[in-house]
Length: 236
Ligand code: NDP
Image: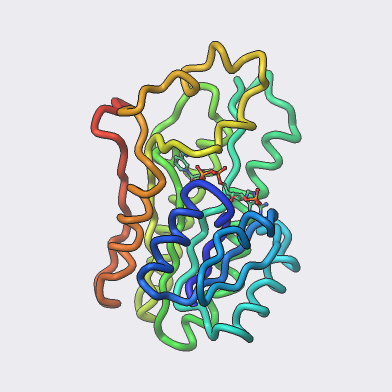
């Protein structure tokens, strides 16, 4: 089975649709169960779980394994973003980003890697960001979480390479999804550049899903270690 976290919207939802069309059995994980079920995909188990809670994520995976078999691939996609200058940001906002974007990814890796190593096959795909390669004022903690994903991805890839397990890091630029809906307080949205992007300044979630599926469909001996993809007209 292919495990996709954060499949209830945006990039995760597009991944679910594209991997489903390619006939893969899916375990779809997010906190909003109804949104997962609305996708109504064949051979897909929808489970409500919080990836930052190891016990909750573990139960979801156990359910998936019982119904759909061992995970051939885990896509660590779930993520949150809160944009604010660091000195004005609440501690709860940066804690949420650390919990979901870093601990959520670590939990996923912790839960599937041992078994992939035992089976001597498997693929992990981490959805990071260009914010894991560059910094953007107003996104200090978000950038820190995505830089952490890049460091973890590369280090763990080196650790597991000889077990025939792939670790692929995907770093999108601007993508039109609902991630920005909660990112900035209502009164600041008017001023914030992210809310004034033109169509050509965003990729679609479909653009990302196509590239992720392409990377997954390479033979097991081919590991696209890192893919940075952004709109052609995105400068940074
Ligand atoms: P969305 O807000 O549309 O989707 C985020 C998904 O993550 C939702 O399905 C949400 O589901 C899930 N999620 C959030 N917190 C948790 C949690 N604790 N446990 C389980 N699921 C959770 O955003 P995107 O599709 O844009 O984001 C997907 C990934 O892509 C993120 O990692 C993001 O950082 C990354 N990214 C996005 C970019 C963009 O411009 N949009 C650019 C670069 C990277 P639910 O609320 O139901 O739990």
